[in-house]
Image (cartoon, rainbow, N blue to C red):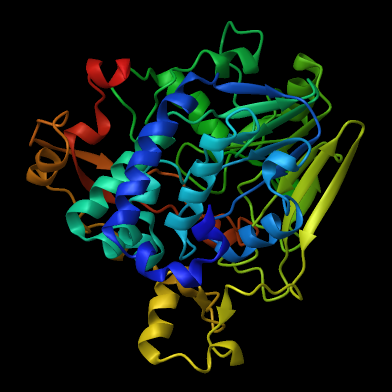
Length: 442
């Protein structure tokens, strides 16, 4: 927590094996806490709701400076984070460590849901995200072997994160969206509650049934259908669900699905993340679906983009935005006069930690990746490395898995990009996708 308050003075620690060991200890302490939580948690207002953060230390600083300035313990209400803590931004380790530390300190006040980036197939997709991928940042920071261990242990925490929350028995909160109804079931929330407390999702573990994977995937991947999708017939008029522009098995939900879900449970609103919006918060489906996005960077929304959160306070909801004029003392643009006295080596170190940001971000950066360049890519994995770091991994056999069929495009307003279905053949140790009986009991 203290390092988060002043990361510039702790650059040496943030690049050290001590930081890695502290993350491993933190992961071991938080893992049983989140595993004991129901897959859908029930909260009371007041509650602050945050969307995607994606390794953006600067925007997270804004919220800490302005919402829990006196500390979370002295701030009334709960704090609900809707997932996607890693990838895209350059400070994924700091953001994850900070949020897990807060969860450890305030387990009944801080709640972390799972997003689609809290799965191995996404946060291990180095071929797509390059230096902005979580696994790359772990290995670049701590070395190949220790970095891989940090990545895997944090993913084991992600495997246990809840998938949804309900505030005041009135507002359903989730990363992506509402799941498709299961045949014979009368409650989608009960379906979520029935999910196993340890789930890989992408890729799944042995004990995850197909219906489990569908429910969980819908929760972390789905989006509200656009008006064009509703009119074009993509959305089934009976169920209200249709095929998502993200491709693969991802779905979208229309007016009918929203109405059915809210009526079924007696709720008024759905609050979710997963899609970038320049204003930080967007409203759709007859003002019944709120999308909140808590990072202003790395999503092609322009320099005037805002980071938003929502305060649910009894009978009102208040939007809190970070505007482009806000500056803090820790994160600076590379051309800022505040870093003019630093050497080039010091600047490059800060860039790697996300404390200095490039102001020449190319909106087309991610559009250069296509299927032709990714089909033959190989995922880092070594059976011997697995054996060295953890005695509960004793299988050197490798298995073929695949990156999620869904296109990981948070900016789904860019239709052409959203329709590009990225597929990547990944090699991963069998131990990463099959959970043995001992691990389940942990």
